[in-house]
Image 1 (tube, helix red, strand yellow):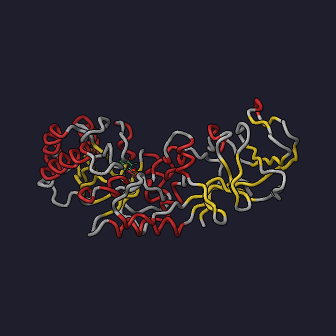
Image 2: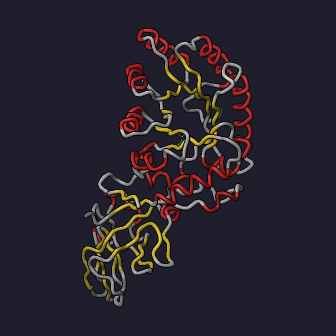
Image 3: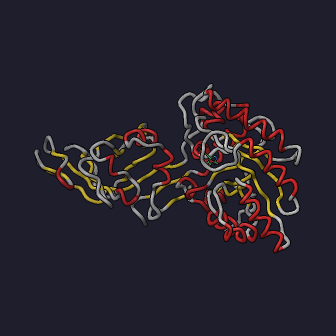
Length: 370
Ligand SMILES: *Cc1c(COP(=O)(O)O)cnc(C)c1O
């Protein structure tokens, strides 16, 4: 038994998917991004739990895709990330769908497929404003023609792009990106009318119904976090986090006033009090920057983290009268009685985003699916 656990509610996760389905009218598909260990929730289990409810999975690299295929995932898997020539055989062997973003990459694949008398499903990535991976819209036209000429090897199944500012409603750049993308899609559909066009991430699902197209890619939202406080799609207001982070008191001691706690004594007790040690630290992914800032829930009440967070432990000042004792459960993220600590508030304290905290929970923290 581990003292620190991440608990994931299957029902909440599936309910979030249902809410997203209801929020995208019509027959639009859902591609569920499970990259980065399913945003820290556990790649294999999250995919297994959700595969009957989504249409596609999105991963960032070949290895994540292979892991899914080896663990019974039969839904199509799109690898968002770039590949190098020596990885092409892996994509084909495991029937993973490839992102193409240049003619050079297309040629590498054609060469391989020609030599091995095979073909592969591809999605074309168009750069409409991120200025990272992707073919520019004007060059895309030429590349689409090239793909069309080589459809014996390149099965042109999808076309996509990624938005810069989607969590902001009525954003000019976003509207521009959507317009640019749609022009390229219209051209590409001449080559395959069934082409799956997709651009909407969670932010766009909140604010841009015109972005839903043939498929949406809700990542953070499916795990239960809206990336914006101004989500105009009201169907989504019931989205709920499926993850909670729990640990236990492993030591309790009564200390006098004016006593320093933890490394460098950055916390000095202001009165006689009880200090408890909790079995979680930055080695688990609980950020050290929450030292003297964060709090935990014990017996339904908030108590402050005191002193510097250590690699494997942190201390909490629970006050002289608290009944907290060794073995008691504490909640670091989630609900206890009528109190809640949200991931968003921790992210704000750490000056980062929910995504980074989620992907930072380390492998030694067991994930339980309830
Ligand atoms: C991660 C990712 C998403 C999901 O983004 P969210 O903001 O989590 O919804 C969508 N599309 C691509 C290409 C991604 O890499």
